[in-house]
Picture 1: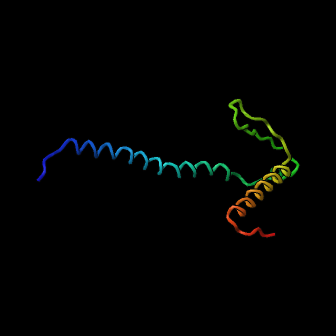
Picture 2: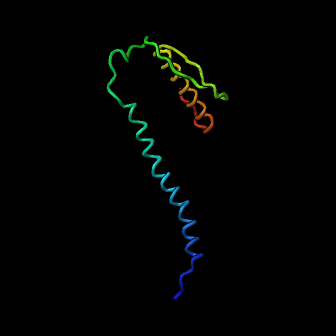
Picture 3: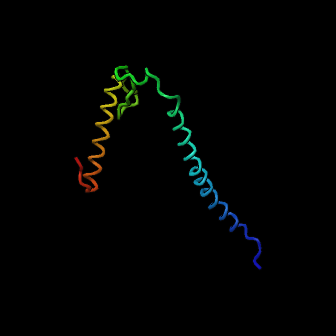
Length: 104
């Protein structure tokens, strides 16, 4: 039977700490993602929210500067069209990158 070796115990503790930290972060990340998504699922849309002519202003960050971004105001219809075009461009790029033929 082996006796108590303090060096072995130290190695076990040193190796266990980083593992424990990684596990805590891994377990906390999904919880943070779930709580962030909940505010978007708020009250149902009213007639005012569905108006395509209402003005929506968003702050867009400029890459490469810490001084902030600029405020961009467009109608809801314009924002929807811009986002649709961006989605289409991303899908087209992904299809080209993967070699899947583009339909349509």
